[in-house]
Length: 316
Image (cartoon, rainbow, N blue to C red; front, side):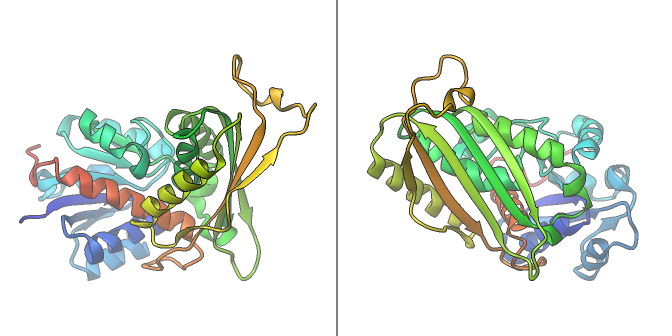
């Protein structure tokens, strides 16, 4: 069976890690191009050593490449602003775009929650939300499968060393995009996202906390739903795990949680807390960079599923 050719725009940490995952671990995807803007980047150098066609002229260089017509899927691992420009330039060529930036031009996709829906919709540009979103939204969705979630809040703590220039430039987009996806994908009535860049040495792996406010519900059913969802994520992110048992805390009378709830929300009686950690696979990045590993692993899962619905060659 022929593999589907893909291109990766962005030769930084995320793009390079994704390239290595495609080369080493994918049975259905094949690297067709690695695209950057810095001719001296390590990502482009590694791609060249691995016999992957490269260009340092950005998306324009990609479009001009001899094998561009054979590329069916383009992963964008640049920045929110750059993706908007890249998507506009690629629109006329009929490629499938997998956006690893917080640009959110296309629908949000979190593989175990709604990937099948967007495969059926045949979306041309899908957005991978953020690393915090990929880690936590499955947990919000798992709880929402059991009971309504009027409010959900996530705190993503990542090693400062794993946050490169792109991540730091997109902090505002991170919180906004993640909060929106908590609602649109996770099913919460209102979502909030907080990111913490932890400067600890040695660097700590990614840790996430998910808070959900709910009414009366079956706690055992929630525990089971969360455990099943964690198992689904761990199928493509082996370092993803629950840190401890799901916690249920009664909300004290008079606690002003109404300030967090959307208008018309039902009464809430319980705070559900889920603790997670994500250890990276260390394909290219250190194991503490689980925040980047979960993004590239989720993008790989999406690309492989798209490949089963996308011809191996696309005519420009």
